[in-house]
Amino acid sequence: MVARILSGKSIRGLINYNESKVALGTAIPILANRFGLDIGQLLLLHKVARFEHLTKLNSRVKTNAVHIMLNFDPSEILSTEKLQMIAVDYMTGIGFGEQPFLVYEHQDANHPHMHIVTTNIKADSTRIDLHNIGKVLSEKVRKDIEVRYKLIKADGHSKEQHIVPVNIDMVIYGEKQTKRSIYNVVTAVLRSYKFTSFSEYNAVLKSFNVVADRGPEDSVMFAKKGLVYSVLDGNGIRIGIPFKASSFAGNPILTKVEGKFKLNLERRKMHAESLKGVILEQLTDENGLTLQQLFDRLKEKGISLIYRQNSEGRIYGLTYVDHNTRCVFNGSDLGKEFSAKAVLEKLNTADTRLVDSTIQDTKVRADKFPDSLALRNDHPKSFGEGLLHFLFEQPYPLPDAPLMHARKKKKRKRHSKNRDLSNNI
Image (spheres, rainbow, N blue to C red):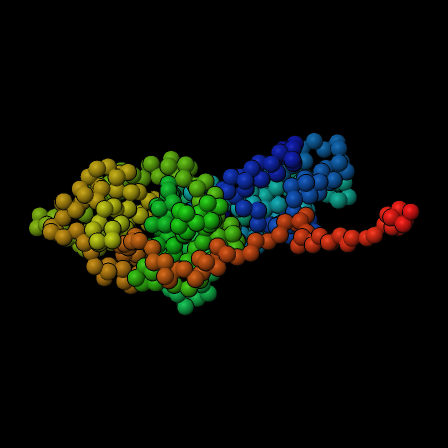
């Protein structure tokens, strides 16, 4: 773990910086300390007001904003709960445990990290001395946390660190709590893998027996940019009920997924050439190579080959998921020679169709990667009941709207006394 402490003169600016990342879908607010409300209940005005109340207690102190960044090794998968505990222990260790502070988990880099916003003005108007806080307090606390939480130690690591494959368990329906299993996969994939389209995102998820679904293009869910996650069985068919993206911690909704595309285009560029070299090396065989042999060879190198096929079983597209660098490339993006047509022409096979036996027994560990998977047409029958429930679920009423429209009272006709009198004259 690496800690960095910065000080400034605008607490509002620090909050706005982190909140803008939240709006872009690249950060999540995960903790509010000493605010009286949970992080999800706080509005922007509450956050700003809490800090500005303290800074006004000692207007002579101009440097009153503190921004702390805690960075972790790229190979580490840290749950939200663990990040919360680390943040509290770190802030307590450097003398800020009684201060209000906000914690944001950022997902705009290739490694897990969080930003902490606080002030050094205390409730009694005195200030916490920031001079040499990094050397005097932070270093000791940082090393203690590395040991306590069994984190990869920052000391002794070169700047150019070797990328370690992510350790993600394949989801097996019925083995563990379904929603928790989906959450673990989705969180790790969003944080660690470099995909540039929704289909590439799904290619990675499907290699761990999870699928993201937007519904049919003519559906209400698709139009409203809805997204649900489901578990796949060994044959790639959805099983169990789907879960709304918004129901998961971290909010892995479509907007957040799409927010990764542009950033990942740049992040994966540096790994394209090395992947090409590995694929070309595995494609070479004097006696000819079968499609299954290519799958097996790439799997040994930590690369999943995902193929797309039509209803007739004919392959028309290939996607390469490199679990070593956590990059996803469509074959055509790497070059013509890596497309489905070019690869199949090089292989020793007269039939471009595959049997389902390539989708069996895939437990993913750091030293074992999933077999190739087929991205076939969806199976609406296994998904229909849950999807209908999603589409027809009654929306929550707006806070200011009445729970139901008041029925208009029918006016009763009343005879006017004056009218009766005039008739008798």
